[in-house]
Length: 598
Image (cartoon, rainbow, N blue to C red; front, side):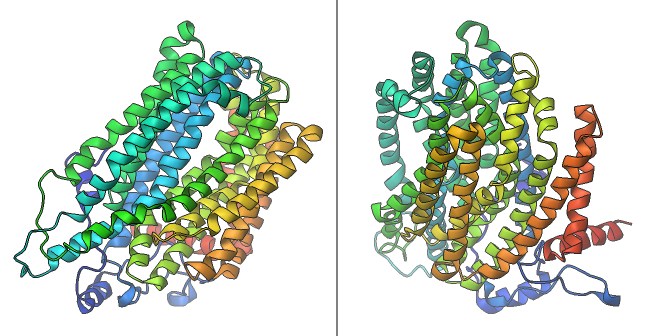
């Protein structure tokens, strides 16, 4: 699926959405009143309004005209989120197929442990260069460049001097070549230093030579992921979301194809080669749309000559350093886990990996909401519309929290059944299922923390200004993870490592929630915490109900199918009993859509 074709997809994702504030304020106000789109859910602490007859209905009051939100933006974001959700789910399914293939052929063994140590490099590169770091830096920069381009296009052409370059093209020219050179040097350095990297990451690994070979094969992702992340940030700033959402589909296809084709010849090295091939496919997935949005022609902007060159400095060292430190600290939690697990019996790293990959699927789905709305927050912050940014962030936290906590309830109730259905075949036996399921339930305790860290970090960096607080919060959480890990691993094994992860990431989430309202976006932290607390209570009740009911059905497939009905039902009923505004509003929206459909 791509937005480069014709028909409905091309209509759903326009070439370049208009800036949020490129029309007079009175025109915006008149248009907003006529075509206002209600938010999907109210913000935390905002109860749904009451409809006729006392029935609950979703708030349809238009946002104030001075919010600056373009008419129809809500429906556009809904379509973008829906398209992103489809591709995210498809990528998650292919990710499970990828993990199933690796588990089937290599199980939880020395070979799979060696591959996972090598895979640490792409995982960190993906976080730094695709998911967080590059996006946090470049989406605000491209958003500012697009705003300045719109200002120049709307300005009267009275300047007869030499025309200034397009701010977007100037930003690309100033950053992309240098970035490619740095990334190429980093990839080459990693290939040369692979033996040292393996010794540092996993000093107790049984087969370090195999891990070195795999690390050298995956080192190319330092370059390819960087280009992928750059393209993704540029496309999202242009409000083109489908190609960036499709990169992990292409990535997993590359890994699956190489593993199936060459595992009998190269062993686990085939999976490492698949990582390299898949990373190249990620670039090709986005390239056609990017070339369309950044045409080769040089537009003339006579009024912008003095300001255009000020876009690139947004990526200076003072902005870059805190983002890099934050992302590296976040990904270092995985490094700590694998370092500690390398001292345990063979298979421990694999158990942690399988448990984490499955448990974090609800978090990935929840964060797609924040990924789609991040450019909106960045535009609002760039234009000084702090109230609009606050409303958007609170809505995102509410909806993302509901999604991830519902997934947490399913994981708590049906972890053994999930692992058995997904992985128990071939070299992955019953003992591996039990060990992985136990770890996955422990990981579930930290899913809300992971979701909040991903959701809260974006507003901190949305203004394009240097801020060290996220790095401080993440560093504090990492220290907690390290201390708890060393204290718990010896006694509790992999479960102790997972517990340390949950405690550390929850500490970071709490710090970010407390600090956001006083530093960047004035969110109501107490209202957000209360809202999430109600949803967490509903998740605990639903998870306990699923845990008890799972034992009543011996067949894993049937038990899991029943749980996919039972757990959501208990979750939403408990949410209603606890008067969670998000649950009440969502059910009211569903009822209204069902009634209108009739």
